[in-house]
Image (cartoon, rainbow, N blue to C red; front, top):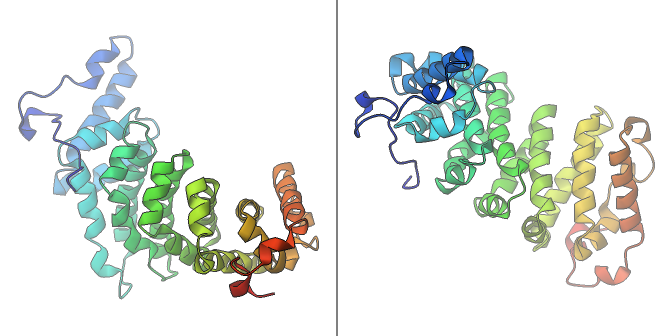
Length: 320
């Protein structure tokens, strides 16, 4: 927690000397509506540190976060704000196991997570957010298995925070997530989550694979490759019963990226699901990009040099 933001007061009452001038003062007199929005955002951020006002502030800021410009730096630099959001998160840990989280408590924490997603996605605060190791506070939520709506909503919103981090290509972000074992947590959601949660989790794995560090990490051992390949294969089978073009697109992109690694490509020649080879999904793929990815995947796997399957590759654990 040593990397949390240093106190930057928004009001003298929060100590540390005189407060900086309100952001609204820089807007000029010709933008009264914008001034009021900024003033409203500043007040709501201050309210986060007041226990009696926090729930309302969480809800209002979460709903209006898209219209509050530079809300992320405001949240990060305001004294006590990030600590207040983390307090909301850890307060529900006791309700994760056994799963007794109420819808109201889930909604309140998800509002806090939405604000953290705002911080995670902003270029000025993303690395600060990462260096403070704040994503680790979300991992217990991704480790839950209850399929009730409060828990599903909690997982989905937590995945949204991680998704915001990986959306911008950054090897530093990927390295952090790999070091903190995000892959098993994503795989868990890909196995048992809702369609939307599965889609976001698969997108995160896809972004990790698209980074060279991520691809090398997953293909470094047969166990890691097998874990990812097994879950992707199970998802393909499930899509035969409940098709989702959006989810299928991310799955195919994951397979295509794996096929670009020589050892993994040799194993995919034997373990790529037949349903991706026999045209089972042709009627569901109307996106030219996805169709191209699948064609490229089949070309990569079909034309693989069998030397890649010599001992030391990944085939011995996948099986034929």
